[in-house]
Amino acid sequence: MSLSRTAGGLARLYGLALRLYPEGARREYAQEMQAVFNLKASAAAQDGSFALARLALREVRDLPGAIVRTHLDERRAKMKSAAGDDVRGGPLSAWKVAAVFLPFVLALLLTMDNTIHGIFFIVPVVALFGLTVATWIAGLVTAFPVWTLPSLGVLLYFFYFYVFKMMAQAAVFLLVAVPLFDGWPENLTLGILMLLAVALVTILIMAGILLGLLGLLPGLRRRVRNDWTVLSFLLYGLAIMPSFMNDEFHHLEGFQFASLLVLAAGAGLYLKAARRWQRILALVVPVVLSQVLIGVGLYQSYPLESWINPADPNQRIWESILFLDDPLAVLLFLPALVNRIPWKDKPAAALAADPTLPAEPASTSRPALR
Amino acid sequence: MPSGESVSPNPLSEPAFFILLSLAAGPRHGYAVLKDVEEVSGGRVTLSVSTLYTTLGRLQEQGLIERSDDGQEDPAPGLPRKVYRLTSHGQGALSAEAKRLRALLAAYRQRLGEEPA
Image (cartoon, each protein chain N blue to C red):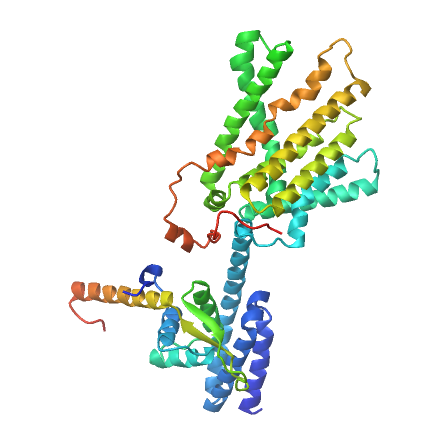
């Protein structure tokens, strides 16, 4: 076999090896690399078999490492892009928009457990829950990109409800209710004041949690500094679970469904809003509306339930105002205050060079995401 | 001092240094860079095509070089159509690296009082 045919064979093998590069690098460089390799192989063939063998051995030595490094580089670039897309204002792909609505759709489906039965209920619920778990993992691994925030908010809710709010209730009960009233007060006005006290302590605990989160995640901190509503969008996910967590009420589905639709619409408006005040309004109004809807629903449904206590005239009101200790709408503004903390960050130049952080946006008012 | 001198506080890898050095003489195609690196290093550094393009990609990402069409409407068959050129940041990085190497050599001479073998 002549050396030029050997060189041609090596070039074809090199072409096959180039297919192992990631898609982006292949699109950008493969043609050029192939052309350069062809020239090198032709030149080496003229210098003799030893030169050709050296060329082949050099590529065999370097190619695996180069492919792995390029895969890692491309993956890191994708992660940076995902982490920064909400502050850079880049458009979200269709599947990322779908991921934003995922927890709302799952919650809507769960409210229909009396309407849809059997496999038609279980299969979509399991599938959507699986996707939600995948979104949680993607969000935690890629530093909280915007499309994962409502789902991560749902995850945060389990801590919010079962840890932070329990802590707030215990603190108010032990430090206020027991010393002053020997327990939770029966009086409606005092009871409402206790609910508001629990809400206040919850806000303080959440402020500490947010500070801790931002302290641990400099990438998220930088994005929040540019647009604090990013963190509000995470907290927005907390509003999903309370909309369908009233198991004892069996006549509430319509109100739950409406409440979740309002929240989903708010998420959509948030993605479209160009200005910060529009974005925060797109979150606060639906949260208040969803809580009021559930409150009205509880008030309306109470007499219809089989477990009502007719001996307690206040019970119907209690049931409908219990959301008052859930300060979700106020929490949405908390990132604005947390954002005023003067963090000891790296200088701007060092931040700009940090490959783990997204690029600095041109303006604090980003365009609509979609 | 070039405006971008402080952009590369970390040492450049040997392939990166020689590629920047090659491009300091003017824009080149990938193949020309490959041949020039071998020449300028006195035959000591021969880059594989894979290493060349991995390094070119990284240098481009760091803003030290830029890639553009070579301006020819009908490039010669088989020749790559893109050229690479040094940016001002790249010039700064190259200059900073040379300064770093000079400092290392000065320290060596100061301690051992002789030229490296």
